[in-house]
Image (cartoon, rainbow, N blue to C red; front, side, top):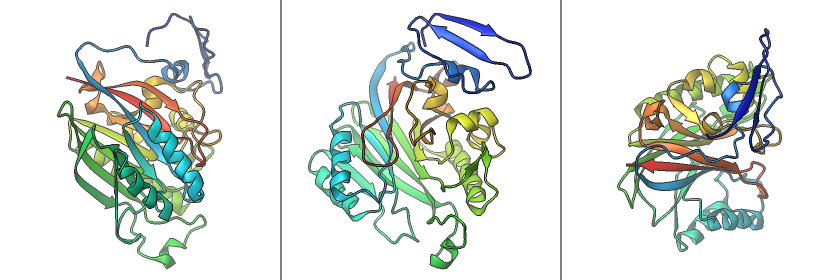
Length: 323
């Protein structure tokens, strides 16, 4: 990211790194041990292009649609999100309401195709959905795996913070204009898993760590020239990158997947849920072009989209696809 910076390193046990840019962007100073580069980058800049031909820049969104919104509110969120010309692919969570399915059918006639599991909640990922521009993408095989084996109501209630079965969806797509194969990994971790920058010592926390271990395997094995991830991870990026809890996102995904927060920074970005950045867009390390990888994709910019009715703000990442 191009900038002129003046940095002062205070050598101490709790080092505080400060950085000022030519644009005068305020840097994140909330914690002395914030991962230096991610915290210093404003998060609102656009990454410079890398050498090579850009085939296209596609917009990928992670969006928790929030099952408690009214039909009118859901319709307004769909209208606003699909009206954006910089959005091409959406990974949804909490998409198991009747009005969500109705909107998916409605927008199929407007150039947006939605994949969603049609079976029972205990047998497949009914709350995860994928919506894409029909003229940009062609959908191939979609597979899914259960994260934890909650088979029915009795087992699902056996926890302080109730949660349904959790799943990981892997959808293979082809970018029509270039023929590039792009795989989307969409998921939703359990809620009530974080406490004081660590995992809660609860069933939810243990289930979330298992979920992340399974995702680490998916990053290694998912097909496609580019692998992108979307999801509500229910663990704050700032806390995770600072504390690096064992079995957490930064710990397990190191060398496997990079979030847009890590690649572009997050200072200046509105948190996706109240004070926390818990909604993520990832690229696998193998997909990344540049010094850190030999792939063909690059995070160009990202934004947290405000003004929606859902309790989470959607997160949009623009991704360049290179030849």
